Length: 212
Image 1 (cartoon, rainbow, N blue to C red):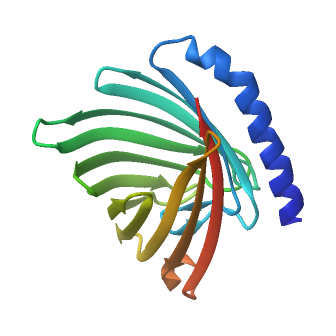
Image 2: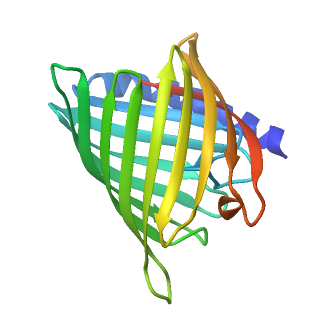
């Protein structure tokens, strides 16, 4: 089943790339992306048990950018809307502030809305988000998320931790490279029991993506 879904998703990625690359490049500031992962993880939490395909569109003007991204989460679609302001100083220090809204179709989940802050310098980057999960038929829950990432020549390591009314952390180690115009990646994700239904686990995830 996993192999079949992955084959379908790869075919979809190639078709989307061929169809979109010409039209997107004609509009200044507009870019698009398509990807397939062997299993979709978000901040250490498994969103699918099988392969997942995704695609997004972004528009950038100056230091401002907005975009949307859609992913298959088996029981529906995840549809994200986001925007940000980002800048890099002459010293090499970078910073950003933005927002993200996570929406879902089907029965997978409800809605998350958050403010995103980021900072980077040389090979290190820091991301911090403050958000609210809208609980259907119950009280909304607040959360925050902090991650630190180090990168070097395609290799990267990320530590992420949830806080406030959420709990759990994870470590992700990975490598990415460009092959024939496609970005190929592999990552090992080790998450805590809070993020994996009561038992800590490790997962190996493969990805292929294309930006145009």
